[in-house]
Image (cartoon, rainbow, N blue to C red; front, side, top):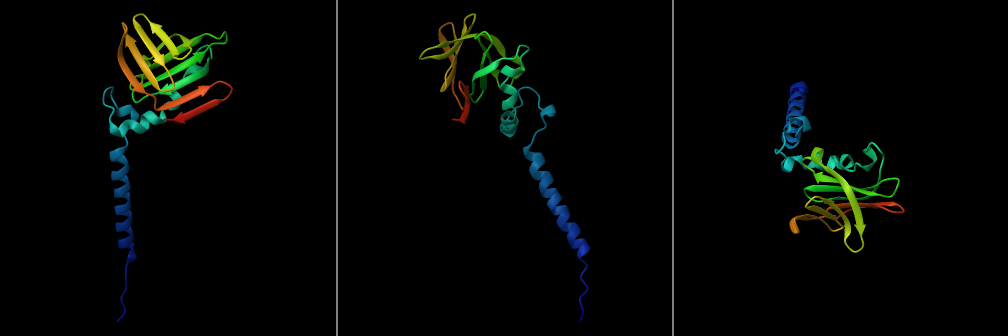
Length: 160
């Protein structure tokens, strides 16, 4: 007795299952940036934040190109300490979820403290360990640094 097997239906079925698997797996865990509305960032959006690290290091993207002296990220914030050609320091930072609302203000380096930038009653303190926001002398936010880059004689970056 000779059995005549038709593999074309079997191969079609396997391809269908594989395509369905990939379609379900990747579309359920990836969000398209254009579809995310402000405030709708969740655990599936973390990849977007990680991919945008270069977009948050913005010293060299300014009208007058600045040099990055120090850059940190926390869970929710980023901060750039940029150096002008004349040596003046500039703080550019904000929330990762709303980088378009970042602020740009003068900063100074304080021995033993790190970098300090003041905007009215609000002070931003950036070190290699924490980023703190102080209003009217009261700390309103202090987050641990999760990523840091410093550039003195050479650029050194590390995850924390």
